[in-house]
Amino acid sequence: MTEADSLCACPDCDLLVTLPSSGKADHHTCPRCDAVLSPAQRGPDNLALAAAVSGLILFAPAITLPLMKVDMLGQHGSHSLVSGVGRLLAEQETPVALLVLLCTIAAPFLQLLFTALTCICIRQGWHPSRFPQLVRATHKMQEWSMLEVFAMGALVAYIKMMDPGEISLATGAPCLTGLLLCVILAGQHFHSELAWQHWSERPQ
Image (cartoon, rainbow, N blue to C red; front, side, top):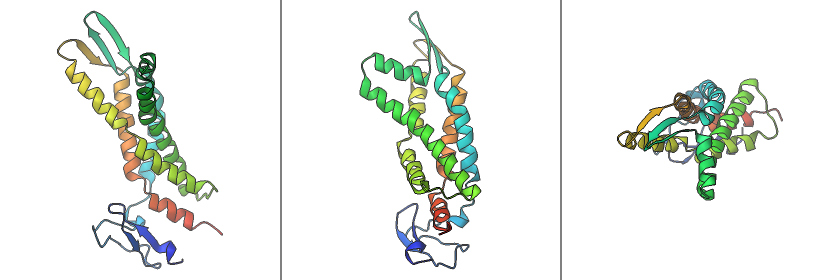
């Protein structure tokens, strides 16, 4: 292994640290913030794979089933995440609709899909030529995925509308909660260091 291959970026403070090439299994910490550096100490990405696959299973019902049933001032309705985007488009709020579509539907779905594919490649020992792009795309989608912001907004709206109207959670709410937990777990337990280590050890 060359000196450049032993460089490791601290996941907390981004400090580049040179790890001893012969000490992969040893415990390494960042000299600046004391974060754990060695991927071997973090365990495999099994939990990330399980969360990603579970999230993909929950994805369709979470975004298509109604989240709330509203009865206010004689108006009745139930809305899902997809119908909310459609309503924004109907109200000529195209930029907002596209932003919601990107951050709450497209980015979480691609994050889960790319995380699952990356973890499967690592578990099966595959080294496809597009693996580096897959790892970078996984990291990029984590930055754009903001499903928790939508969930927080829905919770605030639910609380505020309890007094003037009648509102109740619908069948899509548990699915969206499960999907949100899966997205968080997949992001927390996916270690890009393990992915890059897997790529660096491919047969030449």
